[in-house]
Length: 104
Picture 1 (cartoon, rainbow, N blue to C red):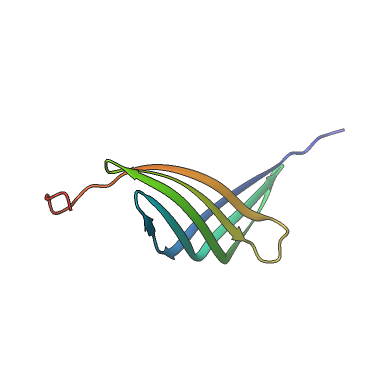
Picture 2: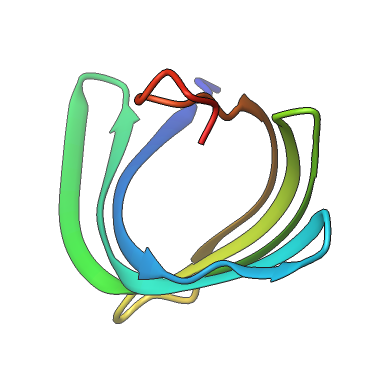
């Protein structure tokens, strides 16, 4: 009996707009937009792929300390005609710097 494995690959490009509500050094950052998602399946020598555009939203919280930005985000992309959605939780670390040289 020969076994076949199916490999699934997904890639998504989100295009989002949102706002950042400042609460002292903390912030809340909701965003909404679209995701362009391509899912590819490979089994044996055959492959198939599908690209969909779907509504995407996320919400994040974060904390800024000495120009360092720490945050956590939950993101959801609902795919059309499919029982699967792309959902993830991400963390980030960033540094805020000034372009005018004055620290503003």
